[in-house]
Image 1 (cartoon, rainbow, N blue to C red):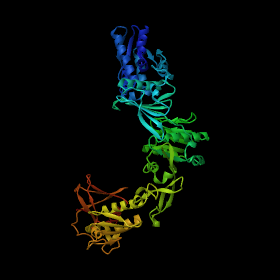
Image 2 (image 1 turned 90 degrees about the horizontal axis):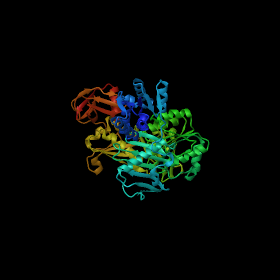
Image 3 (image 1 turned 90 degrees about the vertical axis):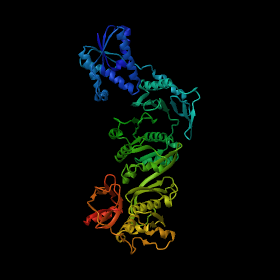
Image 4 (image 1 turned 180 degrees about the vertical axis):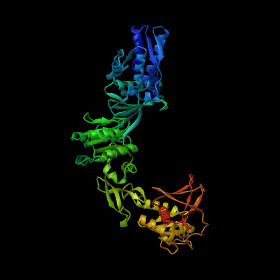
Length: 631
């Protein structure tokens, strides 16, 4: 009798079992190399199925040595592409081909493989798979470490088991007294194997993630992460469960939040530090929406929100939440709870669904309420932020700490007065008091978040004044070679102190450079020397670019290398063959423009929109000769 076992039959020990029963005494067993390769891959990934299969291969070899059977390894190793396509049946097809080649019975515990073999005319011996050493209702051994007030259990080889216990406002990281000492490797391996096997066998659990060195299991209401070497330095098990189940009525602003959720679909970010109770609040929101006849779905990886059966929980389809979003748009939920909006891709998917008209509730990590909103900056176009997120709920110690309303207006930002500085401004308003606490807008080509009076102590140097001072310093330092100091005299006035030799450079030709800065910032700038600041005599003052001395150039230097600047979408670039790492002056028709250092790539890059870039582009438009002279 000839037999070809597939991977499932080897893992379940079916060959040695049938030899012991007498069914395969004297049989010739052809073991596919494809089975050996698949088992090695599973064992290298830390999966117990791989080790069990290798153990069965060793038993087959021993039976062959004893003369009970004849064993032969046949076929070829699967390619990387075939191993990656194992779930698509590539390796199973190789095994069926070997059964045909050797006129053998195909032994399998895989129902699909058995049916495919029969369809191709093979003789198939199908054996029902059974849970391996696991009784479905026995639960997990580590469950005994959970008391009524235990949120999580932490186990690691060589350390004493610990747990986080208490209520949500007072969690303590304590030793588990039920255990005498540190956990050894054998005990940790037994716990880890039991967790993974139970999740596979039980209809109350599943493997959420299985990667080399890391397995994430969802079993009943436990989320369990099992880490193994080489990913971790030792076997570590972290089991977490919710210790509180709440309703929206348990939180402050419950009535107001109910009204917001039901008046129309919203874009909401639930923010807070790890363990603050964000997911618990998200569960309460999901149940409230479901009870009020909204179609609610979740997007989670891993799936650990404790919601009713009416709410379907989706994970990443094909490993990508964008695929999940595409599927959900066909399902047409009223609201989707997106747990763990963390990476740029998550924010992009969240925004895409929200702009498609789906109500979105996202859970994200942040240490302040405003930080949650700032995580959207740069990931979502600034003007679209209020359409993506109109409400921020900050959770601290299990309670609603802050609620922000997010709107947009076209106005002059707080702290500026010139009417021509009007622009779209995102206002972040305290929901309880109706007081604006932050403004977010584009300031001199940068997106800034400005705290208003009362927000995080925002006033004076922490608000628009600080940003204006930074922008003035940045502009002045780009042309001044010496030390620069900036003092704000009020909301609309500043004094810049520079070295005497830098006065003409800072003011610019005809006062043009300092005037450009004043116009952009809406601030009057007085340029003085450091000697003026200390009260010394002989200092040169230049007020706001209107001084008679404005534009006076330093002693002309010989004309240097003629260059042809390139204008890109973001920079004006001057390519250099020499002077790498050196400081040079850039001139137009031998009139000084600015000083720069040549980069390692042999070029000078000036950001478009800056005063320097505008002056350089103007010179190019006028077809002036641009030269570079060593400073």
